[in-house]
Length: 275
Image (tube, rainbow, N blue to C red; front, side, top):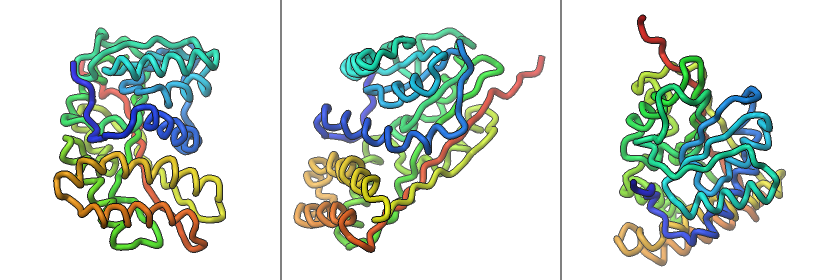
């Protein structure tokens, strides 16, 4: 059972803090119009350190969450987080998404965010998730398309930094553009999309707290986590890298600065088999 390689060399604690800050800021965007009935079993594969687990439990207090991840340390962090907030209707399981430790048709719903883009075989993962899903259940996947990120002002160095970040994600075996293809992948896995929606995030200086938080807690750390890899591999000059990261960070302080990024959310069900 292998842990997912994201191409990241970021300090684990810092990475967890960044992901939790991002999840809190984006929860209304990601979870709009979502809700799970009391008593329903919700599988969250690739739960990581529990950033979405906590939100699922808070927004669906009567549902039961099964949070799965291959990394023991991440599961321990997630368990400590939800227990500290008195959220206890959850089970944490160490397991591989490609070989779920679950029987067929055992969960009512599946919810995952930022998972498939890191996997070498996203369709295989979706097929395995569908196997665990009850016939009347739903699967909700949320993925980003890193090529959709636009920012101003955009220096050449900042653009090179972002391109190097996407290169690192690709060489790690993932697909940084996966969000834009999410609906197609779900169909190829034998699922029936009910809804595929772009979830656009646009922030500018009028949203001071969100702008600074998004830049400082998401964009800059997300890029910096691959510095060692892209510089050592000669993907980008270290001087260009440092200027680019500085330019990205400065966007938050510019009166004409903005960031625009698009996530994609697909909600799907099983295609009924012929009896």
